[in-house]
Image 1 (spheres, helix red, strand yellow):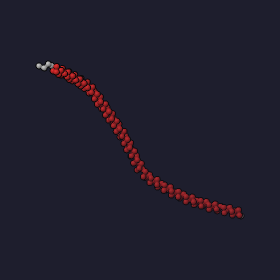
Image 2 (image 1 turned 135 degrees about the vertical axis):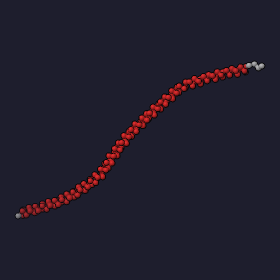
Image 3 (image 1 turned 135 degrees about the horizontal axis):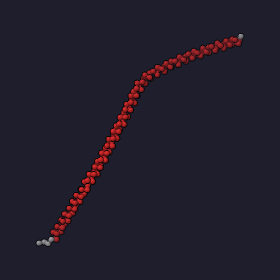
Image 4 (image 1 turned 180 degrees about the vertical axis):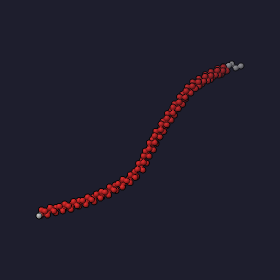
Length: 138
């Protein structure tokens, strides 16, 4: 009988342990359920807040793309304008060289002729001065 009694006591203790384990499991599952409900609520709130932010982010990204395309276009225009200015400056320099070549040669010839004239004139004046000095007094 002692064996039966010990077996019954062991069964009772096992049932008490299983009952305690089930009670602890129920408490843990309730806390888990509460935590999952809190997480669900917070995710819903985050989702509500995140949707407008994501829409705004999409709008900002589209505007940034548009601005980048506009900047690219403007850079193309500025590059074209710089190329046009460079070409105009080259044309001005070329025009200046042609004018210089066209005018410089005739001016040098005129100055040369003027120098020849004044040289000849100085020579004639020198001859007259020399002639006067050497002219016998009357």
